[in-house]
Image 1 (cartoon, rainbow, N blue to C red):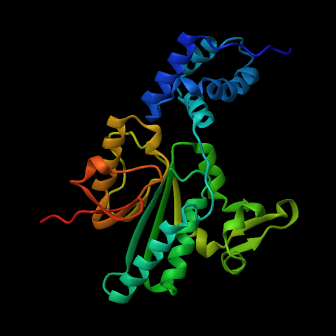
Image 2: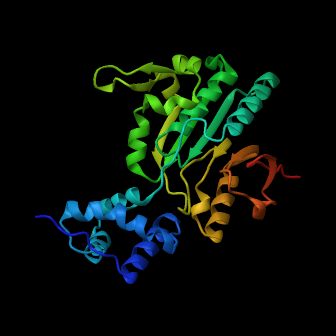
Image 3: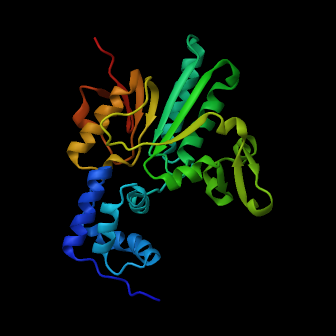
Length: 279
């Protein structure tokens, strides 16, 4: 039976908007109403539901949280690419080369928060490999997290359509990837040595506590806090700064700022911030 696309009333929109903000921190403006309808109506058709109110009641009543997870996955934005905002990776490579030249502890921890389908995390891994060369002398871990379990599952495969590698040099495609075969023809597959540096996990940035026990040398949290209200932005950035080691770096998106966290972070480059060293 074909069901007509239901309309979304103002009260229904407010219910979903408030639920999404409570669960993820994402604040949908009224202009995003069409987006919400287009992304949720597919789920309504799959479930045979005639109204958004029926779907909201289903989400609220599902004690397993599975339908809430599906709803959140459908409403999150996952735009990403390899080496997006290249100046961040140029800075990271210079910083890593300088650190390597200084000697000392060979331990590196980097976090890709809101990693989407993984291009950012793999870009970080490639940059680390390029900067440090012989990785056998280093203890390296890259954590990649996202609230969307669908994109995490995709990222874990290390498999990308060939056209997504347009921002990777031919030399580095050959160095860091294998050509897919059979049904994966036209895809690139990250070499095992590259994938081995990265661990993917689900994490909600607005949770009161995060499970990481040790500080990071660098955190990439780009084009995420722009979707939060001011209070949530401050809370998340403060939480991120608390998870940086002293002198560690936070990388934000091109339209994001920490102007209201100057007691925690200081500018180190364009949308790059360094954790202040305690006096």
